[in-house]
Structure formats: structure tokens, C-alpha cells
Length: 171
Image 1: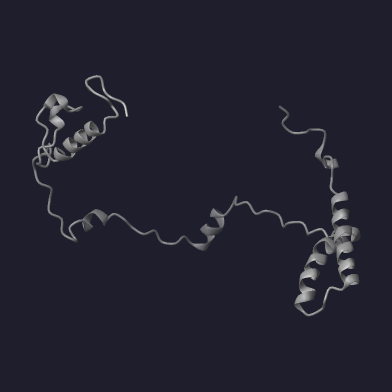
Image 2: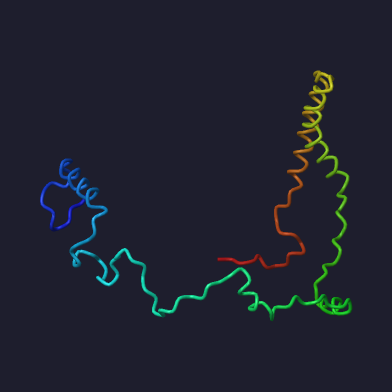
């Protein structure tokens, strides 16, 4: 806690802090008497009365149907004829159909089958009651490692041939 220049005393004095807090709480609802202590102009002090409007005429009383005349000029547009709908759609972009999903080559399909299928079989086989004996477990591990190794070895390390010589933005 810091003190202002007009405070006197230790800023960490617990009794002084409690006394200042009690004074603030006691005077919280008291109206301000010193106009110079307020950080705003005196004209903006609250007087407890609602502000008087510049125009002293009261607003007209509104009934639930008194403002319907304001909506007389609002019309719901009728739907356009079908010919106009076709013309309005002119210029709408229709993307071409996507190319078929590539089937991949035989080695890639077997690699995915080993990398994904072996762990799935290792979970499903015990659930259906077929125990993972030494040979079955060994085959599943070999299939997984072979599939995973094949997929990793076939990863592309450089740019695609159709990318061209541009590397993109180089800083």
C-alpha cells in the first residue's frame, strides 16, 4: 500500500488502515458537501431528482395499437416468379465434381493393413475367446512392424515433382 503526499504516518499501520476503512464505510451514503473534493463538475452531482429533459412536452401516450400507422408502408414482397429465380442464380459458382479417391498401390494397402489391422486383431481376438498364443502374437507383431516400417520408408522427403522450382516464401 502506498500513501499520498498529504498522508502522515506509517502506510503499514494496521490501526490507521482500519480507521480509514471504517470512515469510508460510515460515510458511504452521506452526500458530498465539499464541491472541490469531487473529481467532476458540480453540475454533474446527483441531486436525487431525475434530470429534466430539454423539451418540456411529455411524450405521447402509446397504446398497443397506436403505432400501427408507422407500419402501413411496410409490405411483404411477393415471391418472384420461377423465371426470375433462375436468372438470380446466374453467376453462382458450382465446383466441379471431385476426382475419385485413389486406390493406392498393392504395397501401400498391405502396409496399412499390417500397421492398423494387427493392433485391431490383437484387441479383438482375446475378446472373442481366441487366445494370443506364441505364434499368433509373433505374427501380429511382425505384421505391425513390417507395415509401419513400410509406411515410414515410403514417406516423401523432398518436394513433389509438380511443385516446381519455387519453395514459397523464403525469409
